[in-house]
Image 1 (tube, rainbow, N blue to C red):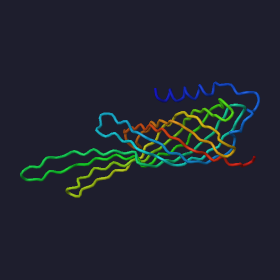
Image 2: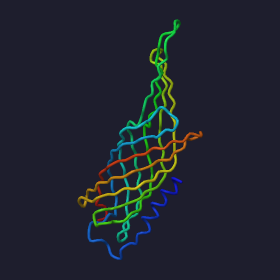
Image 3: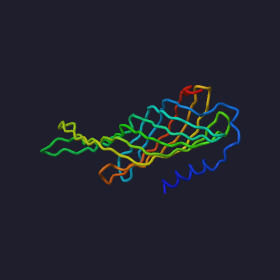
Image 4: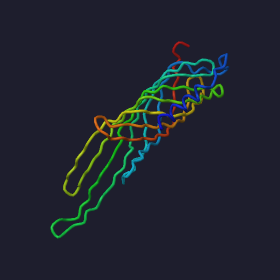
Length: 211
């Protein structure tokens, strides 16, 4: 269902007909590099943990424009602190002291390669949808500080990412973006699943290559 929703969004963008002539504003064709920052959350079901936090990273991509239709491919990498810790207090007995058990889940990094398809609603405003392949690295930790015990397990997840957003061209070289992405991932070699929702903003520097 979630996959179909993402594809439907892209299909809607693709259905917008291209204008017969190039828009009068700046072209979106060419290479670009940039950075982004945002907020991510992992909605876990039947869990006392609610990982969330800030993310940031960079992206690089290329666009090709036909009339008002813009297609491209983009790769990005994000790191940050999308995590949460749950502490369970164990009461003491006449034989043992009271102690805490801390359980932490941390999404250490997220990366993706995505196709993008959109159109210029106005000459300098680009509306787009995006879909592609993504992977993430996580770390789960269980620790008992009172006994100096710490167990750590690192896992890799991969799967589908899709979303939508808009970008505005401030000048020939600089544009800004706002976008939302949803990652539906599965654990490699296991039956684990994880969803990550990310909202972020970014800036892109458009390289004057071949202009």
